[in-house]
Image 1 (cartoon, rainbow, N blue to C red):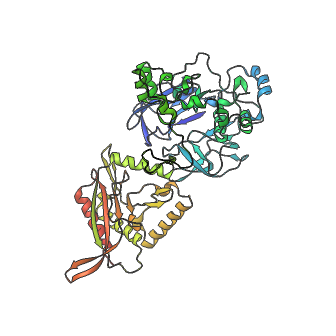
Image 2: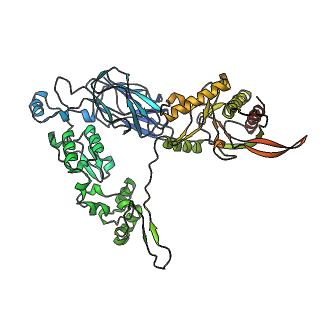
Image 3: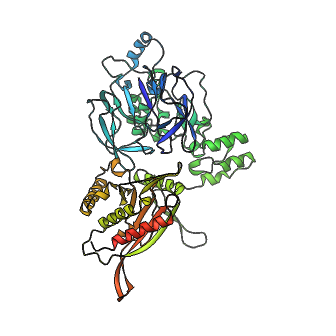
Length: 577
């Protein structure tokens, strides 16, 4: 029996509500057939079946809220994924054909695809394998350490089986949903193989290759889905274009051996694509309407206006067809072809040409965009979420820390001051649910510490800081910093912060507007020390001043609560010890 757990539905949310089931227990479903409508925070999403088979049990009723990763549907024995589906012909008819055509390259057992590791990110990096090929593992035994945006996660085995193949080595980035590890199954002593699924003769194809049933888009062309995901993963790894490979497997399926041969001979590499370059640069290939470089939105506009994409002059990036190109074609006007062909191609070097006016030469410099991923991607997503939900207000103040003895651990003092203020004003040491309008006041204080690194911003957490001495706090922070440097920081090290500290003044900056990380309601920023003249009862003195910036979510805290919290922080920081 196979189990299907609710996946992350694309918004990084922890759960979704069942709107209605589209199938019943006992129904037989196909791969990608919609099974249920789930409501997330912003949309109703149809969840497709990952298997072809009989539904044994539905885990939940309409109106139930299912946590991401919890059991949603159980399938009966014999349920298979798309790439594992076998021909429906009797085994005795297929056996001779399989024995004559199938090679060891075609033998595929249970292939485990990289699941969403809980952060809604598109990929993860292999840190190290915890098992070896040939090992026999138990269910839930950790098999590999994967680094996500902010943590190293141990991925457990979904099967009790023999490990037959790894799809990646330490340092490789695996996309969510791509093959990660293969377990013994079809590769057992039985010698049976799993053939690729046959396509129905009348299977419908849509104009948008992104939604074509039974096809996969490779570059600007479409390859029939007689190629399983393992072969496609190998092709990506070896940089082989499947459109240039002739399959030798059953029904013309491309095997792993075909891919390796193509990589060895260079027949499936970029060199083999030299012939259609002119067509690709023009934005379309007259031999294949799906090869037009146009987004689904542009295709939809073309259908609406009755415009043939082949009649459009492609003026977009890398020869893509834009909305303006379609609109121009619908009016009988098009941009001059020369504007497309005259554009200089990007070069790895700089070049200069004299200006026609006799001035400075024009310098063309190649600029390559850098994909934001990992820690930086997570930071970007977190900041966007905060911007769209929190109502931030920032209070700034200066505190005199002249009484501090030489050698005082400033970070430990900041944490102690936060703990003291949190006990005095619990409303700031809290979580707020903006959808339910619920507030949770925490009796303990877990301080998130913003740590800058070359990879991006980490925020490890000093849990139960209210029970620690300043020496313990410093030791814990040092331990967390070491984990960041060695890429061994775990998810547990970054979860459940109740308030955050950002010590940006250790680099530069006096005041700031630090960003609150929901569901927290406050963050304290400490600026750079400075000496200034201060007027006191005893006259003018030289004082050491520390700038403070407190940002709070005004939905959850009043201005008075935030001000009293900041005053409590200042009172503790002014003490000599």
